[in-house]
Amino acid sequence: MSALICWPVARATFRTRLRSPGPWLVGFLFTVAGAVRGSRHGAGIETFSGPGTIWFIVLTFALGAAILSDEIESGHAQLVLLRPITRAAWYGGRLAGGCLAMGLFCVIAWLATFSAAVARGDGFDPMRFASLVLALVWGCAWLSVLTCLGAFLPRWTNAGALGLIILAWILLFGIVATLRPAWAGVVETVTRFLGPQDPMIFAEPTKPGRDLGPALYDLVWIFVPWVVGVAILNRRELARRRA
Amino acid sequence: MDDPPALELRSVSKRYRLRDGGEFAAVDSLSLEVRRGEIVALLGPNGAGKTTAMQLALGLLHADAGEARLFGGDPELLAIRRRIGYGPDAPLFPKELTGLEVLTLHGELLGFHHGDAKDRAIRFATEVGLAEPSRRRIATYSRGQQQRLGVALALLGDPDLLLLDEPTAGLDPAGVAAMREMLVNLRARGAAVLLNSHLLSEVERVCDRVLFLKGGRLLRTHEMRATGLRAEIRLANASELLARVPQMFASGLDGNRLRLEIPGEDAVPPLVRKLVEAGAEIVEVRLIGADLEQLYLEIVEGRT
Image (cartoon, rainbow over the protein chains, first blue to last red):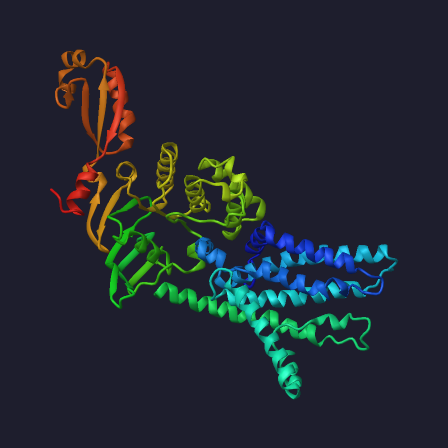
């Protein structure tokens, strides 16, 4: 068994996430949005851009909400952690299970978009695969942030808190852009470092360069919240035992 | 050198802070041990510290003072966790999964390959009477079925040490009987069991030792074998036997009932055999334990 990811826990998490109606509803809308936009000129990014972006983020939130707390608060995590596995491996398993579920929905939506594009006369473009991989990196990074928040926030409030932070930042951005247009550039620069960045620019056919920077930066947003989340979980669990 | 006890608490104390700033001693300088091949019960009123004592032993809670050891080692060592089984009071499971999936997950966590884990899951689900329900989602389970699943989880790894917190709560009579049989089988293969139960009749029948707790302190240890069991045998031909073999039936015969002290359940088959050889027509055999309820009231409640 891996020290970082407990795969039996990942499989169980994958199953539990897929047996909730919420992710399926959002996944359906996500798939439909991709299929409607599937175009011979889209190079695959139409699944994860435009309205697809919104559904993709909502899907990520649906899969990441209460990803740790539903196990911790039910008491099942306590039983699992009495088995010979570490808290870090359990945490990794929960995150990996969520990522696997997200991967499944992404592949379904991506295939729907691809089928629609082929029906509209597209040939095979290898960049379509790149868009899928890039989207997975992006989604996993958001899921990692949600899991990290779940290490100390109860129930589904990890998703609620992250949603509020994003909305607050967008609002701040709008206010600054309106009231202090000179500062908008500064806020935009800061935004490029806050949270996972949209990596689709790499596959964007209308853009001149192949910028892999955001995707590589998103890898940081997978692993840093992961490490921080495990540290928080450990501290909280030890504090609970001592309390 | 002697094997270390399967479970050992050495002067452990655990205090909880209250909202008003005060403190509450859930467990106070408690020492106990459970050896292999022994079933020990914790008895006491609600809030006596029984569950806390179990959680301290498992490392689910850290003691403010004292030490908990399992097989002579730290309860948090992964190698030791592989040897223990724990059935909590009112276990809760992911309701989207089936019982079989939860059991398979725990089998894999114990180190079994997926196929073996699944085989074990089916075997233990059947043993606790969940063969059919285990294929359904846990959301559809009754309280008793969840309790049975918790017991199956505790037994899954053939543990050398089993801790069960109120295992019979919510079980029907067949479930209680099956539980008793499982505990006796575990003891027979040398496992140690620490049991927390309010069902005194069951404790009487299976336990070797009973620890009475109150206010987090150990009040008294009672060896069940020291007092033994009483067999009450109803005979169809009592008066005829008394006339024919008075030396055998003169003492202990009350009407058509013969009451005899026996050291344990193992003594029942030879006793029945001996009686049948003597010509007894046995209608019913009942085992009655040392009166644990009386003892409980005396020790814990201070009633005489």
